[in-house]
Length: 316
Image (cartoon, rainbow, N blue to C red; front, side):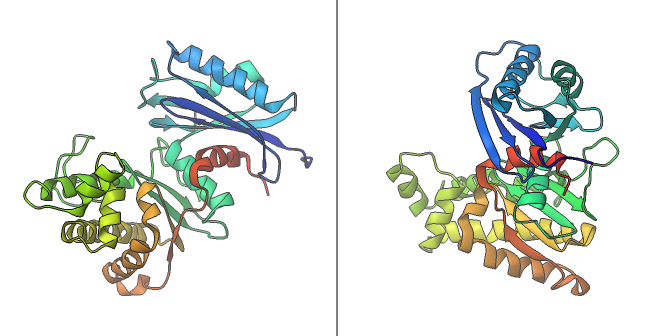
């Protein structure tokens, strides 16, 4: 029988910073810390910093677990980060083993998209759903799937990599080496690149908006210009919504979710995005699927990785 005082530390590991937070059994944050990783030279150094942060943030409390969200490819079953961040020597790092031995506590490791998906499912916009697809539209497209109340990991714990579903074999080359992956059409980067391409021959408000904010043009400025009915922005956003919906329709047909939770920078477009995205997805799915799911914005914002990592030990 578990007591009500189940303290868990969640860690969100990024390429430039580590965030750690102590959670109580209700999922409330009691204490938090943040640290830069810039001058770490080895994987052991990064792990040692995380161990010190966990000891510091837990303030002497006995922990029932440590959950860790890491970017890149993660073998969650064995708690090994295989590769994929700009941290030093960050290949085949046995986080679960190293940290478990140092702390004497169970450690679970998932990739950051799965952590975000689980966080949204347990504490955020996915709460109450049974089958949920989480998609984050940002630099790339990340995703995580919860089926029948369980995180879908797959054989090597790489399941749910929807951003690399190929939707047009003749499409642009993707960073993964394939061509025509979903994220080359529907990510924040894809939206920016499509706008820059059109702006080589056409003028657009996007340029002025970016300049007035002293920023490089991005998807944010494309949506701001779209709001003002700028023709280039309208063309880019309408095309992006078509491709976003195409990928979501594939997810609906594959997983039959009751809820799709949308996060990432692009989701901040709010009402400029969601009504059109819902309508387009509904148009693209087969008839039996219509009305069987809802598309909602994510609820947890910047703490989603921390919350999701800690929620790996969610018991209620």
